[in-house]
Image 1 (cartoon, rainbow, N blue to C red):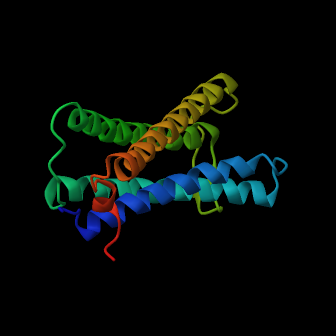
Image 2 (image 1 turned 135 degrees about the vertical axis):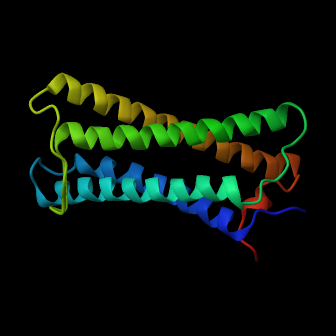
Amino acid sequence: MLKYDRMTIVMHWLTAGLIVVMWLLPQAIDLFPRGSFMRSTLLGSHIAVGFLTIAVLAVRVGWRASGGRNLPAEPGWQGWAAKAMHHLLYVAVAAALVLGVTNAWVRGDSVFGLLHFISFAPGDRATRRLIGGMHELAANAVLILAGLHGAMALAHHYVLKDGVLRRMLPQA
């Protein structure tokens, strides 16, 4: 059975883990009052993990384009669907990340007091809501697509029993 190379596997699971962390952090932000240390720490962490994810995604795309093992797709509609899902995931993740940076810029956020975004729309609540809503929509799209991706991997493993999932698991 063909397997993905170690770098491709590491980048896949690192991306998945970072996306989970990026989703969890803002879920906890509203538990704390505006202006509190915990709220700003969670927001700063969310933004920092977002920048780390941008770097990982850039490395991942570069690796995949240049040296990563691209396994042949399944024939027929399954191969087409798998490729479409991967492309949709990349586009959705990239959109969520770009909109996240834009959101931080619109709001004038700070990351641990080390990186300050100068707000390009100070006091413009409509723009803040628009960009924030688009960022949230893109993030939700990533979660839905990733959930479908994971469900299909499990279906391949448990229903079709074709070994597709094992290609992306770390070497034992």
